[in-house]
Length: 269
Picture 1 (spheres, rainbow, N blue to C red):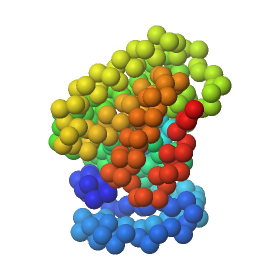
Picture 2 (picture 1 turned 60 degrees about the vertical axis):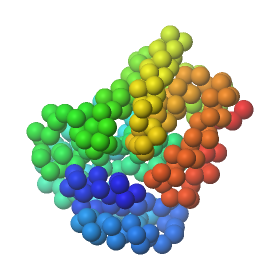
Picture 3 (picture 1 turned 60 degrees about the horizontal axis):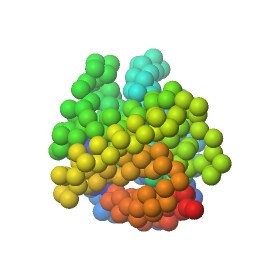
């Protein structure tokens, strides 16, 4: 989590909200709160009541990261929403631009999937409309200190394959999360699934040289595995491996609570 605070500070965020679904979660982690204070971020915990109040407050503009229910993100949708959000901030003279990364209840995606939105949102807040033309791949590589920003962006555009567009999720999330009788979009043919699976394998191979020493590389590789699992929905061995990997990835940046619940949502045959 401290690394996430570093990223937020780098892109001039000034607040970090931690959302707890029950509204009465554990006390604020003192170490995290202190680190936020050192980096100039106000740190607070909110529950459903505070969340609803923030949504209703017309001085706030909310833009999601498009990481939830997406496995690898939806970068093109995110970019359009971020740009529209920046326009709304100016039009409404809003006082707060909120990049929302609330969990969808599954939270299989690692933080790297949210990173493109965090970077673009921060740049739009601080630099205005001209930030829309920023080199996102270059920024991703700089933050992760690895030349893998292009791999993350590639995974985040694969939801467009097969013409399967969803309003609130990627088709591939629905395939993986759906029950055994789930009917996929007719555009997502076996050829499309095989093509995406091959890209995921290529991404994992390209990351192998960094996974031993970089949490970012581990996270991107895990996201690729999730998407690959959606392409092979009935492969029990692959699903077992990703279930094991989920626990390790969760512990990198997430609090212990919620891990077992999210793990239980992964398919099991």
